Amino acid sequence: MPYTLAMLKRSSKPKRPRDINELAASIVDEATREPEPETAAPVPEREKNQAAVSLGRLGGLKGGKARAAKLTPEERSQIAKKAAEKRWNNRP
Image 1 (cartoon, rainbow, N blue to C red):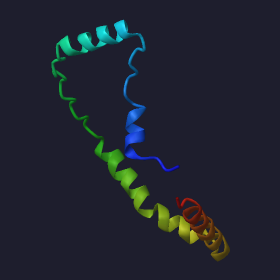
Image 2: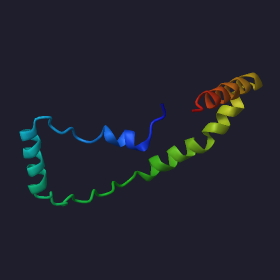
Image 3: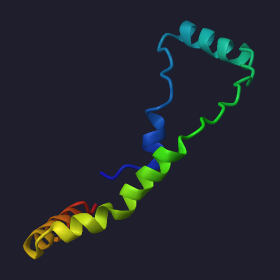
Image 4: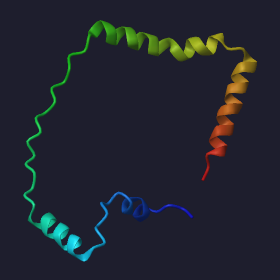
């Protein structure tokens, strides 16, 4: 049976007590609770080390090309077949 959005939301709601008195008390508590003030301080952004940023970017720019150059045509074909199989097996 496929999941629907309503099914997913239903499980995330807090459970209500079964006892009628506990249920009434929880409803009154919920209705009379003071809203929590939204006083969350903004998180300051950290300064990034520019040398580390440029070094990481440099490795990221040449990573895929360098890996592809080292692979044999058989290895590339095997990787591509494995990726295609994963894509086709994940279909709902």
